[in-house]
Image (tube, rainbow, N blue to C red; front, top):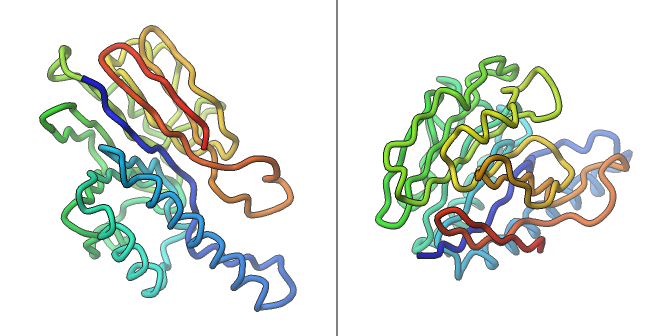
Length: 233
C-alpha cells in the first residue's frame, strides 16, 4: 500500500510585511501567499493527504477574508484528508482561531496533547504548540498503536536548537513513525532518515524577506511501510 502526501509548512498567512514602505506592496505580497497556497491545493488534488506542519498563520490575529479563503480552498479538495498542527506563531490556545473556526469536514487540527487519527490506510499522529515558546519535548510522548500500519507524524519542532519543541534524531529513530512531516525551519531539508523514520522540512513555500531567498516549494511524497520517496515541487 502506498500513500500520496503533500507536505507544506510555515506559510504565515496575514504576515504584515511592515518592512515594505508602500501599503499596496504589502497587499501584493499577502496576495502572493494566497496564490501560492491555491497552487498547493491544486497539487493536492491527486493526493491522499495534505499535511500542514505549523505556522499556517503569522500570528493570533487572522482576518476573516483569510479564513473564508481557506474554507473555499479546502472545499476544493474535500476528498483529501487535511491535517494541521499549530506552531509557535499560530499556537493552539483557548482563544485561538483553531479553537473557534471550522475549516471543513475534511480538515483535522491536532490539539495540544499527542493525538492519533486512524484511517483505513494509515495512522496519523500529531500535536499542536500550546504557546509561542513550546519548551516541552513532544516526540517521546507518542506511542505507536499499530506498528504494522503506515504511521505518520505531523508536528512543528526544532532539530536545530533547544526551544520550540526540541527534537533529537534518536527520538525520531525510536518513534516508530514511517514519515515525520516537520515544520519550523524555513529552508527545505530534503528527505532524510533516522533509524527507519523518514523526515523532512519542506521549508516555507514563499520567501517573506531577503533572508529567505532561493527556491521555495512543497514536498510531494509517496510513503509506504518502511519507505518514502519525495519530490521537491
